[in-house]
Image 1 (cartoon, rainbow, N blue to C red):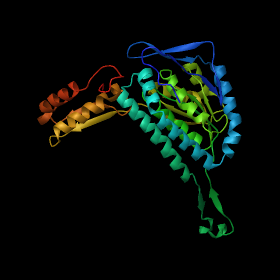
Image 2: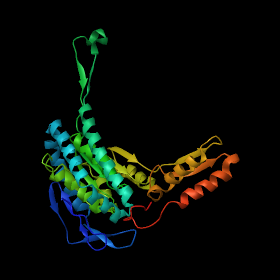
Image 3: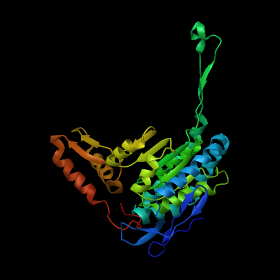
Length: 330
């Protein structure tokens, strides 16, 4: 069971996972709450050497991960989802502490994370290949062709601050479930959330030894991950400028980038204006607008512009700004 940290005094301590081994370092970096500037967690200061160590461990573990039965990996994810659901409040409070996500929406993120892991486990049942009819041509009548999906090896995962739990799940659950190994570099803004989630994987009775490593840091650690020849896939969610740097540094690897969005809405004169105003206010200001699909621009038919402008102003005034620990804070 994870401790539900008091939001005024306790400081949570994240640790490194070099494979399944948990370690720390003398140099620690403090994470302060964006809400009240209180120190809420610490994490070891990692460097390129630590990153390369984690990558070597992940490389060695690819042998056992690739040979692991699919049934074990499905049970692994189901176990993580079950225990995350049981620890929902501890994770929600830590999200509120580290990134000041309002507690109501923090709980929703935990629920979505549970769903992500469970859906991944379900999808693993479809990791099959295909048999191809080579006898479509006379020359192929004595041959058989087929393919099957195989793990690629080591995957480097780099995740952002706005959904620091569920976006980690989006990367590591499918990667581990498919028989790969992972080195995760989470956002520096939420090290404890990532540590708690990684610990669920590593402590599971179905875990594959050393399949998951966790290191902390920013540009130095990220560059070491991206430029190394060990990872075969780089999976990154974040800003366009950083995605551009990764593309240039990665070399011949598979690179998966989820970058910024550009979301607009058009309000026609036939629209249900009160409903549209409420949805636009929510879409624009949810998570303080820190969502890749948050509403950025609204085009309004001139004939209903004045009425819609008043309605969205009224809807915006209803959104409470305040402590992330209060149930009604938006």
